[in-house]
Amino acid sequence: MESNATFSNLEDIFSRTRTALNEFKDIITPVIEEAKDDHERLYWHHIYEEEDHRFDRLEHLLPALQSINADDSTITTEDSEFVHLLQDISLEKFGLHNFLEHLDLSLYTFKDTELEKPIQSLRDMTSEDYQLTKQLLDQLNEEFKGGLSFKTSVPTDEKEDIDERLKLDTYAPTDTHSGSSGQSTPQHSKKRLTVGSLKY
Amino acid sequence: MESNATFSNLEDIFSRTRTALNEFKDIITPVIEEAKDDHERLYWHHIYEEEDHRFDRLEHLLPALQSINADDSTITTEDSEFVHLLQDISLEKFGLHNFLEHLDLSLYTFKDTELEKPIQSLRDMTSEDYQLTKQLLDQLNEEFKGGLSFKTSVPTDEKEDIDERLKLDTYAPTDTHSGSSGQSTPQHSKKRLTVGSLKY
Image 1 (spheres, rainbow over the protein chains, first blue to last red):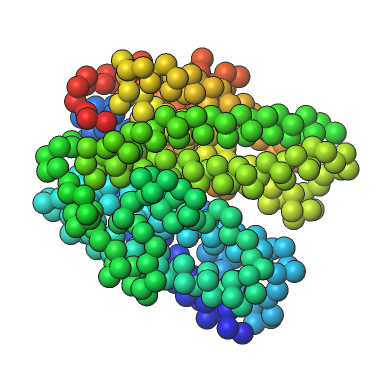
Image 2: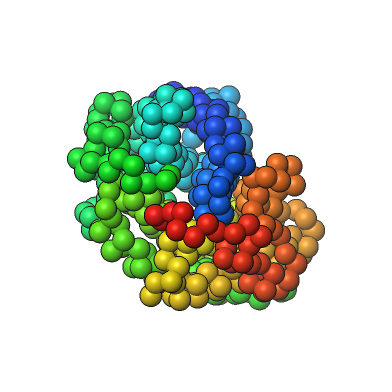
């Protein structure tokens, strides 16, 4: 069925981002260990912990995706296990958006350092995977005739009933296949970064 | 049954934190709107968005808790819907820990301002509710003879297989009923904050 390819793509994305988040955790580990004060330590610890938690969720989700991809039987929204799997996938759609913001926050701190290039490359990959994940969830929703509930998958940036001043242009919804082509990095967003205005 | 009181307590906690996170969102909304540059805007937007997402999850979880509390029938781990409810509760246990860190990050920024007192009071309430939630999940695990899976509920601070240098004393596990009595605020944690070292 159509959705088998979709789930296979989702498995690839979540497997890829599990590797990417571990690379990112390794990058910021010495930053936490060498933090100059409690505030800096808490800032990076907090980001590390959220990605560490995302890793635990992906470790839980990926085997479920793998078993769906290994099983050719028909999938229906009558199956409550399947509905919960879709809800878990929608949660990880938000997780990809959140990772994108962690990487963008890090780019402000590590701009013009040896860490900028590896973080930028994780950022570009994550931006594309996030856009692809949105497309794949849209395809699933079409296949299941809108019968799916993704209540917990929409970032503030993409909500319609939110004060525009609380959203960021960088993360505005895009219809392009590649997120990076449709999005700007913080360095190129409309409002300019005040260089040197921040410790991190 | 024993667990009915537990679920009623959990409903109270998650209803209380839903109100608290909205208060916090209102506190930081003008901070986002009046941010002096993109980095400061992204920093507060990112925290706002995570709490906004937590609100969406709680809006999904609370009706399920309410229906369990309204139903006197026996609950068993054979019921997959119940197992998923417990997994959602364990996710919100982590959500409470994450909120605690958002409030502590904010206390660094708003120390000695008119915002310190309301944020500190949300922080103290959240710390106690987080400790209580851990106790309630332990009780459920005992009642169901350890048959529950809370894979995605443990913060880095409470994992045993993690480099100690990545954990914060402030969030070290405590057996006290009240989290605040067993925990210190950042201002009182072992390592001192370097006053004035941070913009936010």
